[in-house]
Length: 453
Image 1 (cartoon, rainbow, N blue to C red):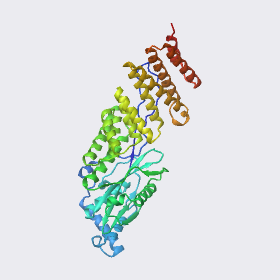
Image 2: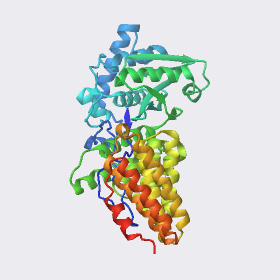
Image 3: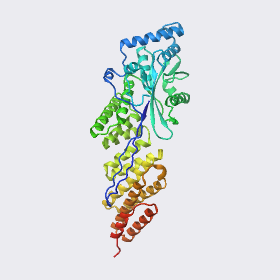
Image 4: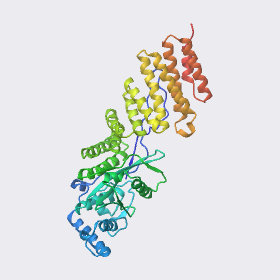
């Protein structure tokens, strides 16, 4: 399983820019996310590779279990007996002595590394199952399932293995020690759309996570078949590890983000084109301040599925480019994201974008539309002020930018020749901010410069 991080701007108190100067959007920070790590040199042989001596030990273990259970070697067992033997041999606590561990802050392992360490997460167990099935000539497919926390805090993508043998399809969850069989489906593609199958997967997922979140499927499960797909899931996890790896120094940050981008691109080159991979790749570029590529890959993710936090970093990337065209696209991105999930920081970013677009329009002489965007910024700032105790946005930041919106609105109304209207705007701003306990020094200074003849 791999968690999905998205941009979630962390606001800082800042001094407001000068009147009619472009305001700065606070830098984005990532949500807390689950850990993965980089591959070792062993991964160069392929993440699903099993050396001959190790495969010989696995074969011996399979034959031993099959002999004890069915009085036959593994290869002589029927389909259901083979599935049961694989489960008993390779599951958490099975005869091959493997142990389930969520592997927080640990490396994503190749199959070889997993077998050597003896402990792994569900992705490790799934890759092992696929690798062994391939060696045994069994018709295995990997299913990718994305679960989303109902509170919007995170997404996780899970990979599991299914076998279609005879008239049944078997789903083995080695980490949960579960084998399920399904019949009556013409293909695996039909099976993964079945509500019971999806419910079973969700139940097993909740057992594995035990994190208190309620999860729902974020999208239809996807079938992945072939060596490329199996390797791609590994590289996607490597990318995720580097994306969340702590790095304080600029050069370290650049290095780990480059590693993340390289790994995600390798997953894409292996034809793993999913919302999850595009979103994480876009976010890696966003953290690296490569806004054009953040937009490129974020929009590819959104073509596959809308997600609020992808709209958030795509909108922020447009914001950073600071043209009126990009501000308009940022407004559209934030607006679309807020239709999916109300994220206070995204509302704040939307207000900031209206404020900055208003400045751009005012500078170009379009005072009427500039004022409309200042009004929209003020409306959002006011709504956020009334939720300040729960939305985590600093009151000082709301106050500073509310003052800035009033100042800019007054400046451009005055530029339109309406001095009296500009004075009324400043007075209204002073009254509102004093009522909210916010500093009004800048507004009062502007008020002194606005005098009727």
